[in-house]
Image (cartoon, rainbow, N blue to C red):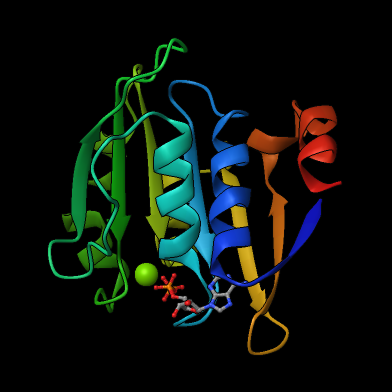
Length: 156
Ligand code: ADP
Ligand code: MG
């Protein structure tokens, strides 16, 4: 399932609309090169979950928690960025697995590095840069397949 965006506002909107498909306990692994728009996507996703403060890149803190205000049972957004992590050992040290909570959603930038921690039941979002302002956002993963219809609507 993929969605094309032109400009950061469109990626933010894609993130906001994507948030409506999320359920408590979901783990979203974001991949794509530096500057692809991962943080931009999360900013919209946070808005879609009813986070009131602005989502900034957590690069220096690795994980940030945001309180959510929605009626879907998602009380917390964990936003991690493992860009600076260089080995799987370090990923394991971060204990990211603990971010998987019943009433929370975890979103991980450079999530492909952390994939072994989470196993198969994740949603993957890959952002490809196609031009200055153009991005293609691909959604996949076992966690996405059971809501393929909603995803297809998100993509169209
Ligand atoms: P990442 O977290 O992947 O490193 P950011 O979201 O921090 O990326 O930054 C994306 C950069 O690309 C921003 O400077 C943004 O203005 C720019 N940009 C241009 N077009 C887009 C687009 N379609 N979607 C997202 N960002 C875009
Ligand atoms: Mg980022």
